[in-house]
Length: 202
Ligand code: ATP
Ligand code: MG
Image (cartoon, rainbow, N blue to C red; front, side, top):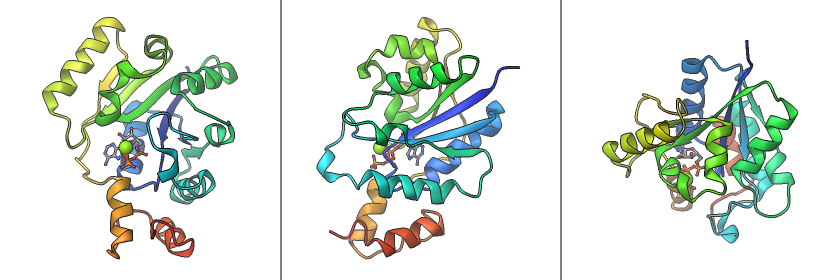
């Protein structure tokens, strides 16, 4: 049987329960052998100045995933200088493990941009896409998109039914900045790290 590997890409600034629940639910549903979290280097679509040091985001991702034996963290994108695109990451992973089947895990807000991603057609041939609903993306828009992808690339896009988790990294950064508690929004090790390194205060 083919090894099945989930890939959870993100800025993870910081990683939160939304990411972790989505990854774990995908792992269980698709019976994945592992899920690799890949914190982004310089994300093409985000303003680099506003993003926390890659090292801190990587460290928090490690802390958050440490207690799950199926979760791994890769520094491959943060070690690469310049822009990083999902298609290049997946191609590199495929080269390392040609027989594995890859499942790229995203929230609906990421998937709706798929046709703007670099080499999306090639990417959709290289891996499956698992997505979860997210606030701001109407269900019918998401379902139509998944149908469209599957018409072009059979059995490629899946909608995962998981509890709706209305948490974002943006909200967590805002909460820290305004002195609100982030307890239970992030694993306690991540909460501690944010406090220790005084992240998101400025
Ligand atoms: P930001 O607010 O900074 O954009 P974020 O919470 O969206 O942060 P990202 O690191 O941008 O987190 O997201 C990585 C991936 O996880 C994306 O595919 C995103 O859609 C997904 N994701 C993040 N939070 C959730 C959530 N609460 N439910 C479902 N998917 C999520
Ligand atoms: Mg986001």
